[in-house]
Structure formats: C-alpha cells, structure tokens
Image (cartoon, rainbow, N blue to C red; front, side, top):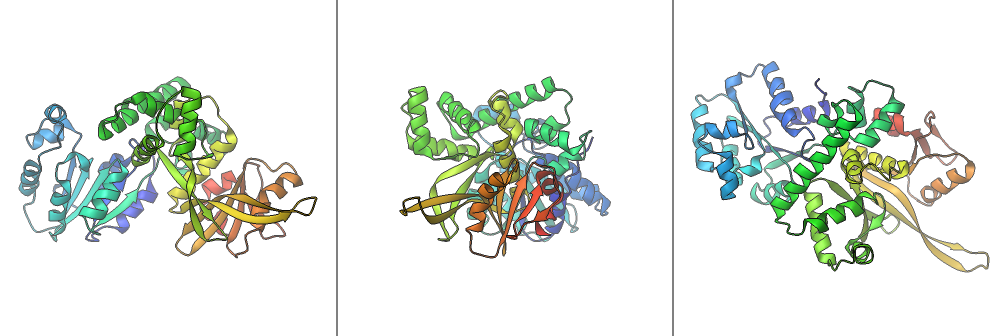
Length: 431
C-alpha cells in the first residue's frame, strides 16, 4: 500500500533544475528513500524522462556498492565511506550524452568526500542532483559550509495525521487515538496488530536510532544516553535544561554526569532528529530566553515505545502532535512568554510570567496558539485565554482543543478550533 507524500513531492518538483543540491533530511525510517527512489522517480518517468537518464544509487545498499567495486562489510571493518573515485568513475560511465541526468543518491553521508563530489556535479549543466541524509550535521555542517549556499534542504517528517488518515481504516476520532499512541513512522502505520506495532517500534529504537547515535558520535556510556532518553520521554512539554537534568540524574540515578555531557547528548539526539527543542520567546520584550527549553519527540510512537507505553498523558501528547504539525507546515515554533504585573489582595505588585504554548512564524505571518485538551467551563477557558489577551499586538490568537466543536471566534477575537479540524484542514487557522 502506497502512502501519498504529496507535500514533499511538490517541494521537490518546485526545486527541479534550480542549480542547487536538493538535500532531503529527516529521521531514519520517515520515508526519505521511498520519496526519492520511488515517488519522485515515478514522477520523472511520468514527465517523459528516459529511465537511463535517472541514476539511482544507495550508499547503504550492498548491491549498489558492488556496482562500483565496493564491499559494505569491508567498509564497516575499515570504518570508512565509499570510495569517491570509484563512484565518480561509475557515474562517468553512465553519462553518455548531453541530455539532462537526474542523480538520486541515498544516504550520501556514507560516501567519503561527498561534498567535493557533489560540488563537481553542480558545475555540469546536464545534472540535477538529489540526495538524502539522516542527521542534522549533514545540513548544518556540510551544506552550509562546504556547499556555500548551493544546498537546498527539504526536511521530511514522519506521517502527518492527514497522511496517516489516507490509509487508516476508521473515523478520525479513533484515528487520532492510534496516531498519538503508535505515531507516524510509515512502516509502523502499515503493520497490523498491537504486538507487531509495539515490537517494531521498540526494535527501531534499540537497533537503529540508539545504535546509530552511538556509532556516529562514539558514545561510550550507553546507559547515560538511555537514561536521558527515558527522562525526556517522561517529560515532553516540560521546561528543562542540562543543569536541571543533571540534578535529576544526581537525585534519581546517583550519577555524577556533568551538564556539559548532557548538553552534548541532547545535541546528538537533535542531530538524529529524534527530538526537537523549542526555545522560549519573550513576546513583549521581543527577545529569546536561552534556557530552559521544551523538548518534543519527532514521533510519538517512538516516545511511547521508549517508556513501554506508560505515562500516556493525552495533554502533553496532544501538545507534541500540534508542535510537530506546525513544524511540518514550515513554521518556526517557539514557546511564548508574556511578562505581566498584577496586584495581589494587599495591593502589592506581583510580577508573573504567563506561557503561550506556541509562537509560530512563517515569513510575515505569526500565530499565537494555546493547546487545551478540554474546555469544560468558563473558568478553564479564561485560564487559557488570559496569556493571549495580555499580548498587545494584532497577530492571530488561537486555542486548539480536543473538544468536538465547530471553529468559532469569541468576543476577544480569539479563534477556537478542534484538533481534528486543525490537523486535517491546513487552512482552518487562517480563515
């Protein structure tokens, strides 16, 4: 069964022939290879491109490596990537005329000196280059530095809820419950049964993600890294920082881990796209607050598998889903802080910080969003809208709730929508 990934296909189509290296990044198993080698490949064929002018190569495929005289096992033993000279010789043998050739290269970081190789291909008028990579350093380090403005990133996520619903057999209410439990990794979504999904998620975590992070970053203490993952999994949506986490390690694990080591581990987890950090933003002061931050998982199924499907707090899970959806839509997402001064019963001025769950920016657009699991009465609603009412600019203010309601505006101009409408209708918050 094929899951439509039209959002990402369209982003690739818009970038065709733009003279840049198209880099598809994202967490492992989110569908990057399938997007490039199947969906985009078939798009090119449908556009009339001769299959001989589409060169697909996966650097984690023993069969493909054999084509250039390489051996995956030998590469593992020698701790090296594929030989660039052998690869370039293979590509040269495939280019037989001056027509446009499309290079679809999977897991490019496994090719030694890939920056120089790709930069060389950019100088050829008849080559359009597309690559995948599985860690943030491929973008932040190599694209920014080595490609000097010649890299164009398409960041891919696990399935959105709308994509998930194209293959889910059931209504959107049961669908969201399953999505929040097992997440949106395509291979998990397509599996049948609780045991299969649970087992596959746990295997992915231990056999792919943790092993990959440890090997790439030469982590020696796997126990500390796993403990940090457990702590983060149990506290999605809570403000924290390396110092707070160090104190948790000290009190719970009797560990002497330093805050600098924790910071390093957090960077590794972000580089692998397992987690993402939301910074705090002072809305009135128009400035960022460096620490603490909130951490969200790129896939809730992975988070839930990490804690053996315990602590399934729907409030924070819903917040995580909203954060991911906003990120998928291209927004830069921060945690908002509104500083206010109020008088207490004795007339004394008390300074407070109110939190806005998300400050979302895309170009000149901005939305302030509160995630409210339920709004059962006026008191709860007043609690949720208070921070929004204290913001004195004209950008749109929104509450997203799991209550089944039609979208409506209140007397303060605040829009309230259900999470189902928000996730399935990209236009609803703009109406």
